Image 1 (cartoon, rainbow, N blue to C red):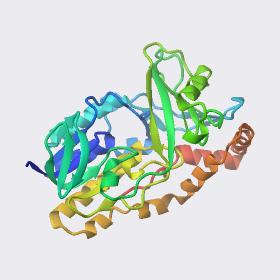
Image 2 (image 1 turned 90 degrees about the horizontal axis):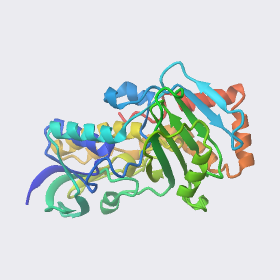
Image 3 (image 1 turned 90 degrees about the vertical axis):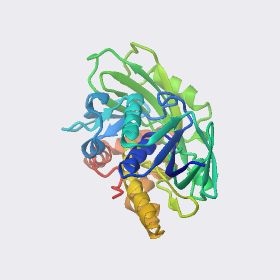
Image 4 (image 1 turned 30 degrees about the horizontal axis):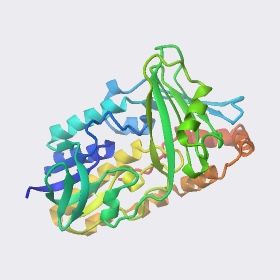
Length: 369
């Protein structure tokens, strides 16, 4: 039986980034992904925030123009609150191309990436795979999404609180509109979250997300209804792509790593590494991947279980208790009248300051290091 140091399950941004870092440090890495193409089954809008752009080397040619304006709308869509930054706060990436770039970087570092291979289970140091032979592994990394099977098999904590999101993406006429991020607080179309339009002058992303139990007509129906008159949406000039999936919003899970045969840990959505308020997951997945890689290298080098204790979700959760509280507040906005009142509170000086801090601040997710 083939033996490797690490098996990474899932070729999203977290899995590919972790696989590359581990291979760069001399470990034999096998990364498996059930999809046959990374351009299919996309689930993320691809919005990178300024802090991520500042701290990570992302491919410039795959990022859209900078977005500095955010408009916050009540359910009536009247008199939105405009917040403008003096810096580029958001850039939307071509995520299919970003994944392909990250895959090439992982392979160049020495990781072996196999697409079309499904994880089937683990036991006694053996990782079972559908579509290829099992492998013996010293370590298993779960980067397999919000409903992680690796988490279950390793006896680790699993996500329990989800939003479900859906989005349409299409090209727009270049230069037809100024880049802007439109956010609509309306529990009738996005209970517990937002409807959004982000248009960077190249492509438009129109989406909704909310608690599935409150979406009585289904997320796709709500998306179509919202998109029909969504503020800031430009006319499509090309094919329309649909995306969607679950978004964990319960915060970073407490128990993320486990010794055993093999030992293992969780990263990305599998670890709940998503901002509980904004539901952004790209920044935290990169930050936690760097910590995960250093913990894995230390553990495999020394065989000391204390290394795994550094990968502690409790410490990370403690650093954004305020955002977990705001998540509960947002979930409690259940009527259009309440949403109108909530937006009204943001019109004052204190409200605008709080909104600016959330949308343009540097503390969207704690630095895992």
